[in-house]
Length: 116
Image 1: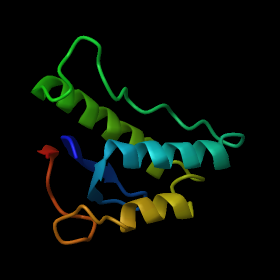
Image 2: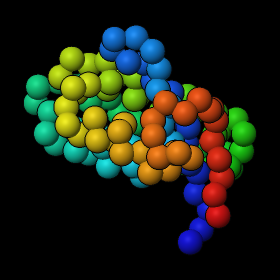
Image 3: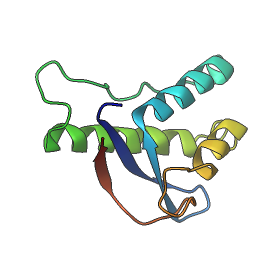
């Protein structure tokens, strides 16, 4: 298996507080596809930040931080949406967090980790 990035993305809860999840970009892509397919006629599901850049190393610090920030913005827009935020798909995405160190959401951390 090649290198991949494990993203620490923090988002706001509708009732206050924050949670941090650790996910691969492909996890975000899968959630985006499911949400767009299921809810796309009822609500706009924003696009994800780009996966790659033609002009930058995808493992450079600047690119990684821009993508992490974009994923954080995207997830916040999903979680705070009245329809999407309470969907089973989003709840599973947040609660089934196998990449977190202790297997639970809410672990305080930030950034991206390159895995190989």
